[in-house]
Amino acid sequence: MTFEIEVAGRARRVTVEPAGGTDQAGGRFRVVLDDVTCVVDARRTDLGWSIVYEGDRRSLDVAVTQETRGDMLVQFPHVDVRVGVDGRRFRGDPLDGSRSANESHVAAPMPGRVVRVLVKPGDDIAARQGLVIIEAMKMENELVAPRAGRISEVLVSEGQSVEAGRLLVRLE
Image (spheres, rainbow, N blue to C red):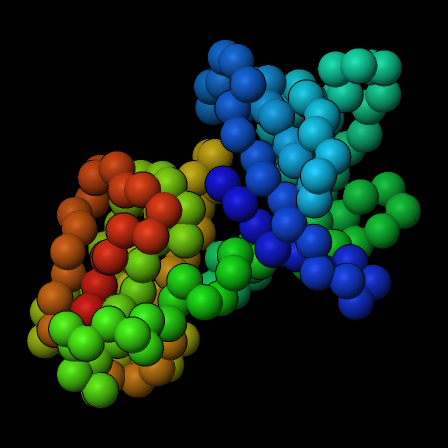
């Protein structure tokens, strides 16, 4: 899963991927921040994660608070960081001529499993209304409507696995 984050006004790219056995409680992960790679053992806590770096066995606790549109507030011991999935994945591709000018869609920002579908075709929705909840890395992320409109098509069902970029819902 790749995130674009901003720290002290500077955009950074973070990739987190399994690097061994993982389960609901955590596991071993490879983390790439810009071009720096480290391997960590991460375990869930009541507030977020307890992380141990593989190389020197340093440890830290990180609190994670889910915010809107899949964004998160990640609180390290000495700094708070707002983390969000690149918002461009929520907007339609202007070069895609297969849709009308009034149609848009919501795509999966990361690989995961559909936990709940909150809408059905024909539903009138408001901007930022929840559409689909996806579980990724044992965290639930509510994907919201980029604008008000009507649901023209729901392309996933509960329990279905999806890859990053998978089209979930079409709006008219």
